[in-house]
Amino acid sequence: MKISLLCEPAPIAGRVNEDACFVYSDADTVTAAVIDGATQRIGVPSLYAPPGREPDAQKITGARFAAQLSQHTMYQNVHCDPADMILAANTALRKRLELASVITAEALAQLAPQHAPLLNEDPRMIRLMLPVCVATVVKIEMANHEASFAHVGDTALFVFHKDGRVSQLAEDQMGQHDDAAIEAALALKAELNAPHLSDVVGHERVVRINKRNGLYHNYVDASGAPDTTLGVGVINGLPEIQAYIQTGTIDLSAVEGLLVCSDGFPLPAPWDDTLEQAEKRAHTMRDVLFTEGIEAYVSHLRTVQERDHGLDQYPRFKPHDDTAGVFVVLDHPGRSA
Image (cartoon, one colour):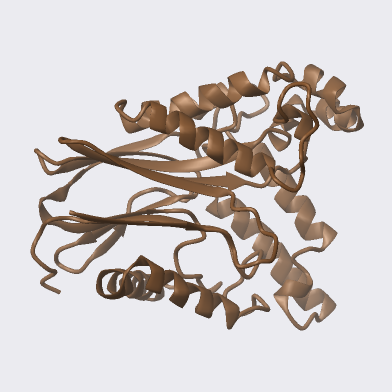
């Protein structure tokens, strides 16, 4: 077995990396985790600042705080199953936030009174204020050639089969909400006759949609019930995460490799993406990873992104994102296709 790991911030001056990852191995298992911090819709730094101290905004964000705490907690619980590792991280984040405030709309309205009207209108909007990350964890059981995984959010798990197929097992739970914001940006670009999508993704109309999408983090409807057709599993301290954790097992007998990665790792997609195009991108990623390695792949990714700095060929919110990936090559013969 060969394992390679990469975790780097977007190539932007002064950028703080909000991704995290780790690998742990012993005589029987290999565990890989990738955690991706998500931007708070409403920043409340006093929630995650050390007690009695003011936060240093240049060194920490809510996204980085959640990702780093989750990485640390998952590693401490690495002998648990993947779902329990994610739940442990969620519990640890809640306990840490409760050092600053009880996690209720009433308490957060007192902590950040400027947002009290929003919380009074809909207490579920506390989700916009909590530090958030998403994660995928895979545990390989070497003796029985099987892997188990747990997942929340829009990190990803790719399986590279010996026959050349590539499967993506972890659901992109955030995809429909991101697509709604991109669709609004594309409509606004046409309306304003803007030269590039990058000219409008920061427009208030697009930002407002993105901001409200935070409501879907461990979502509950007006009656307080989770809805898996709308909700997005995240690590934000709320107990509703239980409804959104995706789990599964993988028979590795016909698998050559696994990739766990953040959403900044796969190649970007065109807006009118087809199944054929998606398969081609997945095969390109597979081929570069197996033949040239993870660093060469990310170099290729950055080139593709930079050539579309205006965000027109591959509509997205920003030219580059933080990138984390753990690539595992299993001890099997080479692909037959």
